[in-house]
Length: 309
Image: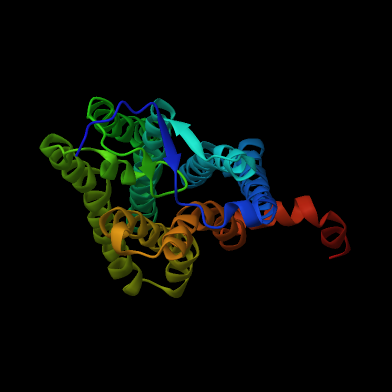
């Protein structure tokens, strides 16, 4: 393959964009507005109310902040592309989008691990909870959850920036690991580092979460009904978010691996699921399933009804 001097990448994953551009734009704009509003409202509630300044809610706030930044990394550019004649992005901007996208995806797994540990200490070691889950501990977990993925992904971004490209058309609507398909030769260093990153940032946190929740379930099974109820109320939302997010990550990995054999429309639908579901699913689950957050949401939106009751 001939080496190209690529400055701009064409985002070739759009389907019938000239025909349906305003329909696409309207739907994506509504979705982005919903994501920003729903996540920001719960973030503000956690910030404002003192009784929500506990480790569990701080980790939820971090997840919701991730959703806001994650969506803002993708949607504004996507909305511009839908109104443009050509869907292009500079290669440097593409790599920046790649960096933010995978940093936040990896951060989500680490935050869910921290939340699993928090639930483990709360349910299995309740008397030691306040000694273990101090503000310093929470701060270290948050720093670790954002800094480690950023460093891991930065290595991949730098290596990709130095790799020669033989194609300038990306089979996607934003810059994910499909950028590797543009490279003339798949770098062994990138492949090895990618596998190490996958193990460190996804598989190990997932195994830790499974191990932690197994311990929780064993303890709650042997405990009274009240403990089981508490565990179900606080653990179930985290597990639902974990399962949903894991499926989306599997989508993202499969897109890069099988995209050449995939119909364009099917690939677009899969990519839309990656950017749609999780950012809307998180505030919905935590807003409805977390008792204290749900209570504050009802006070915010239905104050008259609460006064009547």
